[in-house]
Length: 391
Image (tube, rainbow, N blue to C red):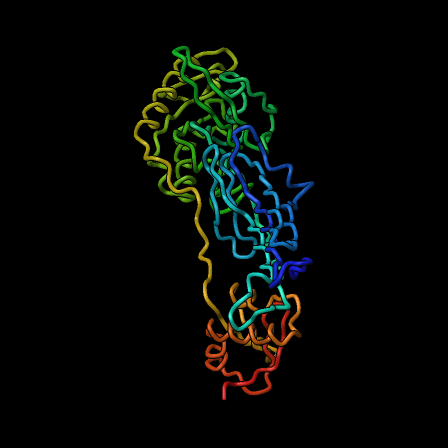
């Protein structure tokens, strides 16, 4: 709040400038970011504050935005009800995670024919503060699917530069691994080594959905059956169980192009007439890479364009009155909160402005419809008053 006072300059008046808007927080998909581990140690992000308005109608500066880079395939969910709010699939996809508050208006903005010397200004709006759940769903062209110890990690280490942990016990792989496969004709595709599935994974058995969710975005499925299974489980039976788990988790996965591959051909003792590879000796590896490359190329050509990557939350507009369990009537709505966010609500012209704004917003009618009676407490933001019905 400021008034113009200059020597030898007649007709002064209010000249308080507006405050600057607070910065926003943006999440941006970046292919150079590999994980969400940075949020484990530093889960909170804050944007810059807006600057104060000053005299001579000088506006405050806007706060700086904060841009947070996340991996491609990051899904943002509501922490309370687990709704998907945003899905940042492709490089450069952006989503505003929190909006900065709008700057308060200086007293020069409240000048009118009836209000020649407003002695109040508007407070800056508090920025949005919220929590989200974030998870990463891998983006891969090919997902290697199979039982634990089916040779997935060994295979991906043979066809790409990925170096996953390899051991002779089940569930060696606890996190998916990505590898880039280069084909002699110059093409490239990304392979994901999905940790081993077991029967009942779709129902949450074993590590269940922690693994299955990473298959959702793969263009091609490579189902690996172990030809040297110590449990003597026929490759056809392994295939049936794996496909049944995929169908139970997400039926349309069976509509994806897929290749059934027998692994450990060098030590195989189970009959199998399909495609065979040995990561140890290299048998069938080049043929497998060529077939996968063809399937990926075909899938890329036929797949539809990228869908909208953000699921927008509906933003409530207008004014809403809610009666709380303690009997207090709470008025909700951005416009109503701004109407009472003044620097000095004790000033007579400020009170008159509040009454006028609330009436134009329909707050009085909404309180009457909600059952408010003379003397009931009404709360709008940090402002509380006793309700008096219109006479």
